[in-house]
Length: 160
Image (cartoon, rainbow, N blue to C red; front, side, top):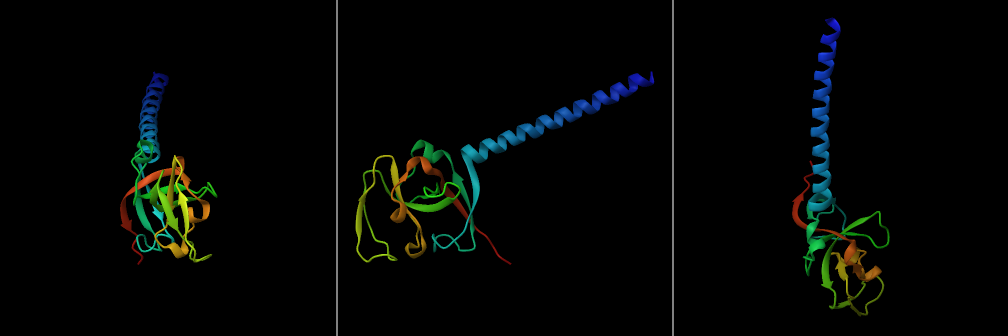
């Protein structure tokens, strides 16, 4: 009789553990799906997007569906995987899309302006602070596939 009591307790504990594990797995799957395919928070900092973003950093919410649906256009703030170093994610503004002609200059290297045509399947991105930004002026048009998200919300980080 005592043995059957232990088995009943063990079954109850095992059922509760499985139920909690199932809830945790469902939550982690939902979290993975949401942050990779719908939207995710990003901490963006640095001087390349001054005055739009703060040097100390801003919290951004990025929509991951817009690039997949082709809803990225002129003036949008986007998260882009760096073409030079895939481990780095850049936050830049879309200046031109495929077929557009861009006239630009690099104030650090020359005063002469240059002209480029954005090829099909690419965008031209630039930081708002042209004096401190590595962008399409340095590495050329960016393939559309490197765009990871379109920023739709910004919140400033408060330092105390």
